[in-house]
Picture: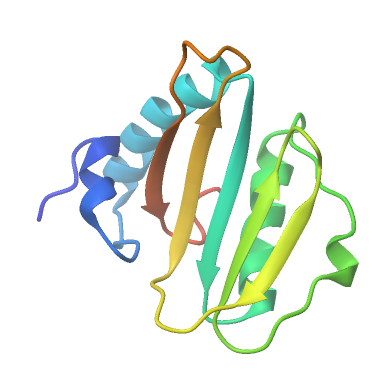
Length: 128
């Protein structure tokens, strides 16, 4: 399957490898959604907790408005799902077998009239 737009990722269970052109195009499209959202939640599926935490740190390094607390206390065994909420700054992690790998970004809105949208999975190093 060819990945040309952000929506093309939505049918995947795990993040594809993207070339530089695809990454740039998808990032531009994603950032329009991120900057128009009131806040985002981030879900990260990874083979271990260190990879999930590193992916989250890449996001916070790229976007200074996205901050999380207590990253040092995160730990889970085996494959993990990490979830961070930009609005609260909270991050949780749990062991979860049988999941893919990648980053899911959900754009959230204060108004109930605006529907949240989830994008991804994006590669763990997408925000590098």
